[in-house]
Length: 230
Image 1: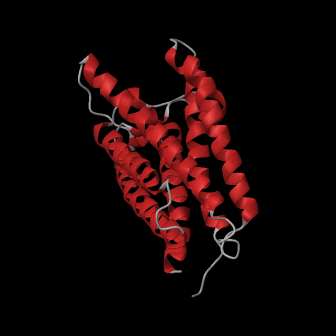
Image 2: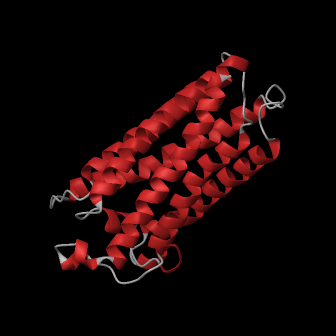
Image 3: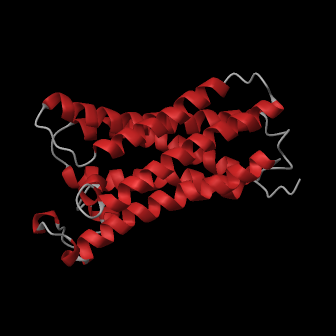
């Protein structure tokens, strides 16, 4: 199936593009101070995955890093839309009226829309509480929509795994299921942490690690589907 090969190729780019973009922004803002006209934007050496020295948005919302981050997120959003629509086609091929199809498309495309909105408004400052709340809601919505879409996709693939046995690596599918379960568990456990004031560095570290786990799902997709030459 051509759709499987397309999903396989798109998924690896959904992993590579945001991973390279955010880490490039991090390296530039910590290691190349000469590129930043406003020295207040600079960040001391940090490994935020461990020490939470900065948030992702803190590294990406200033000039010139937003010139890397925003186009990368727009591209990722487009790839996400393609990814979820192609998965819909694959699942419907084996079970046309699968009960999760509409949910997969809704939450999958919804996550892409939220990512686009987040990227558009990143770095734009308005001193209004409702605007700040709007940005937080958009970012939270992206995470929720993404994890929910991933969950429904894994459940759908599991429900037709016998029909896909020659096309997918079942061990990787199980790893994807474990990953999604961990994402849900961490999200639930983290609710008190992220809603309470303080713990800034812990929140930042959680943000970076959670981001990595979310996009790692797509790397697993690349590994899961077997190459199909038909």
